[in-house]
Length: 134
Image 1 (cartoon, rainbow, N blue to C red):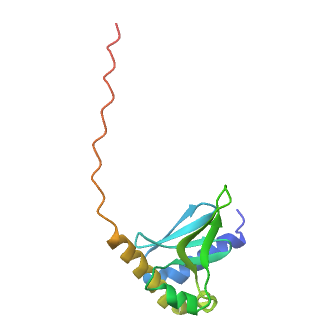
Image 2 (image 1 turned 60 degrees about the vertical axis):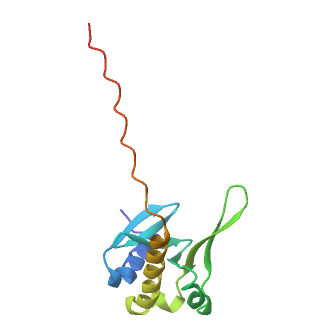
């Protein structure tokens, strides 16, 4: 099986984020999602790595010339998510990525903490018993 440029970029992004913890990659929406210690912190799409941001982190990303992750819906609306491109120089090494990845992880943790706790799920109803064969 041949390795594609996309696979190489995804592998490089995994390596860039590895100093934060255990990195898991999941294919999604034509791109890839990156989890560090099971916390979703980044998206690789459109040949770019986008890191989770929030209000406290956004000014640093803006000052570094980063751009938000945006896509167009089927009905033509433009949607921006709370992910911003990684600075170009951060893509050079895990050491240069580390402060940006730490901000992404902190943003993800703040987002998780601000959500109300999940309600417990109701138990599934058991299917009706089949009538005995006669």
